[in-house]
Image (tube, rainbow, N blue to C red):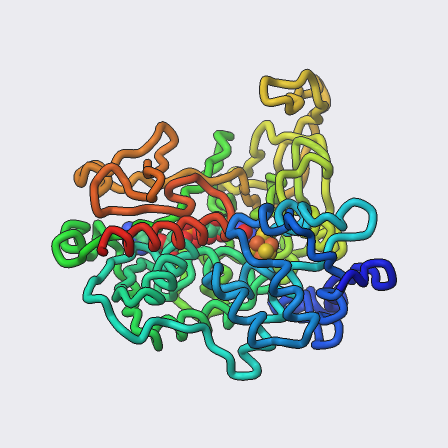
Length: 459
Ligand SMILES: Cc1cc2nc3c(=O)[nH]c(=O)nc-3n(C[C@H](O)[C@H](O)[C@H](O)COP(=O)(O)OP(=O)(O)OC[C@H]3O[C@@H](n4cnc5c(N)ncnc54)[C@H](O)[C@@H]3O)c2cc1C
Ligand code: SF4
């Protein structure tokens, strides 16, 4: 260990832009054995590891780094699976720079340990060598219904199965995974990664009911009557509308309509939107990770041009810096300090341009963030054949919440106590439907903690 003096931080290699722009395959390569060992060996094994605290799952990072550096793959695999339901997913898509790597002691000056890449390596290499996560062999005679097979629901299922609790998972989509499957594009997270975990859960006894919407195809009350507890992990994917004129035009789309539609095309599933961007000028409005996923998806769908318009600058973008850099490398044009004013339509009601106005940053508000101010008279038009709005998400308030005494906060988030129990005893919730649109790792933590609380309530 402690080899940070003679070994520099090296990130996982990216595929060449010209090649990667042609497909939806992951752009980062998984570390080879020697590279993972070397990068793990840079760790200084702090007594009070900040990376562990910076990780929402409190992963045993220094321990599995040490095991990797010592070439003890099996121990590293067991340790990394101990606190996490799918370390290879978070290793790929966590915003590491804001979490574990951002907290690493070496981040100031020497370059943080490449924690995410080593985490991915451990699982991938472990699976290659035939290692498997462990589940309970003895059942405790309790069963939980999980509504939503996204990260929160799959995490709850994993930690319940490990304690011998039976689970049945109900999801309205035809494949499990939530946004891991239908939102986050394959160039960030290959779809086989999540399908492999779903297979392991099925082998451990989980029963998946896909294409079943609770509240429509099955009532919520059927679950409360037939199960010992229920976990709700229904996410928060109601896209925010722009409020501009004509934003319901046929060539204006919300980010999730676009991303889900393209993913269904790739899966060869039936589509409802049929959005085509090939040879078209695509304009994406917004500056977060979802906007980056939309612009990079448009490039791979062979758009003529792809512009991302954002009202602040690159430094102030809410998403991951890494994804912005990847989008730039791949050929996305960025226009900063601009805000949409109106949509310009032709006589058939189709959008042909977006009227923009230039902006500047003004006084800071109470949160300390500078307010965006429009510059009068600076309006101009940007040609657009397709406009995609990536302006954030709200929760969906299902009628079965209120009818079952499940209370929500003023933003529609499901209220839970310190045990992730909702205002209705025996009903638990977590992930985006509770905290609002956030991260995979926080949804996963909610699922894990709710599972622990349910197990405790059964004993
Ligand atoms: C485009 C995009 C890119 C993102 N990129 C990243 C990233 O790079 N890194 C990161 O950490 N986070 C990212 N996120 C955020 C992350 O995906 C979410 O925070 C996370 O998926 C939330 O998990 P969840 O389980 O709460 O909800 P979801 O993933 O939304 O899953 C909810 C599930 O519930 C099902 N469901 C909903 N209602 C019902 C019902 N009534 N009956 C049955 N099933 C139902 C849905 O079909 C879905 O499968 C991204 C989000 C988006 C939109
Ligand atoms: S789960 Fe995310 S924050 Fe935690 S160690 Fe892994 S990559 Fe870092």
